[in-house]
Image 1: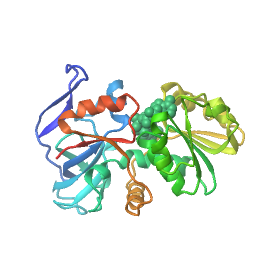
Image 2: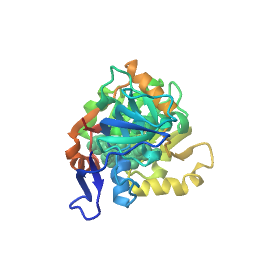
Image 3: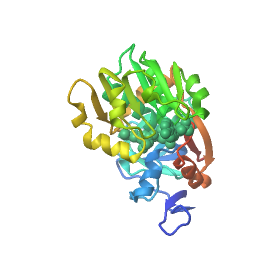
Length: 312
Ligand SMILES: NC(=O)c1ccc[n+]([C@@H]2O[C@H](COP(=O)([O-])OP(=O)(O)OC[C@H]3O[C@@H](n4cnc5c(N)ncnc54)[C@H](OP(=O)(O)O)[C@@H]3O)[C@@H](O)[C@H]2O)c1
C-alpha cells in the first residue's frame, strides 16, 4: 500500500511517500481501507518533538470502509463505513489501509461524506471535553474562545452556542467572517483589539490558540469563572500545567485539558452533525501523495478549520 512514512533521512520534512506492506489485522483488529484522514496539531507536534509512532505513520482521525476483521471482532464486518481516532492506538492513518481495535471505531452515517467524517474525531471531541467536562459550560454563560479559526476552535464556537452560551470569538481578520458564520455573538480581531483590556469578562475562557498571560486571563474571569487551557504557545501550556493549581486557590479556576479519545463523545458529536446543529469546517483537501505538504500547511498555524487528506 501507499503511505506517508517517517524517515529521519528524508528531506525536507523527514516524511516519505512510499510503498509499504499492507497491514494484516490480528484477532482483535479491524483493517480499514482509509478514504479520508484529517490532520491535527498532534501530528506535526509529535513529529517536531521526535515522538514517532511505532508504525512510523502519522494520522489519527480516519474515516473509511472495513476491509477485513480479526476473529474476535463482533461489531463490524467488511463493507461497514467507520470513523475513528487512532491517537491512542499508534496512529497510522496516513496510508491506504490502517488497523484499529474495535473500541476505537463507530459507524459512519451514510449521508456524511468521508472527508467531513474524518474532520470530527480529535478536534470536535477536544472542544466538547474542554467546554463540558473541564469548563462546566451552562446555558447563559459568557464564553470566550481564544483561537476560534482552527480545527478545535471552529467546533468550540459551535458547541458553545449549542450549549446555550453567548460566545465571543478571538481570531485574526481573516477568520472574522468564518467565526460569525459559526454563530459567534461577538468576534474580536486579535490584531486590532486587546480583549484582555476591553473591560469585558467571562464565565468560561477556552484557550485554544495564541499565547496570552494566565494572570491577565484570570483577571477577565467572572467570579467562579473557569479558564481551560487546550493549546497554543508552549509557554502558555507549561505555565498552565505547572502553576494552574496554584492560581486556582479562590473561586476562579485555571484548568488544563488532556483530551481523551472516547467513542461516546464521538457518537454525540456525530449526532449533532446529523441533526445539523454543528458542522465540520474544511479548509483544504490534499491527496495522500501531497500529505507532507498538508502537514507543513497545518504546522504554519493558520488553517481555517480542518485540513483533510482524501485517500481513495
Ligand atoms: N489539550 C488537548 O488535549 C488538545 C487536543 C487537541 C489539540 N490541542 C491543541 O489545541 C491547539 C489547537 O489545535 P488545532 O487543531 O485547532 O490547531 P490549528 O487548526 O492548527 O489552529 C489554527 C488556528 O489557530 C489560530 N491562531 C494562530 N495564532 C493565534 C493567536 N495568536 N491567537 C488566536 N488564534 C490564533 C489561527 O487563526 P488565525 O489565522 O485567525 O490566527 C488558526 O485558525 C494546538 O495547540 C493543539 O496542540 C490540545
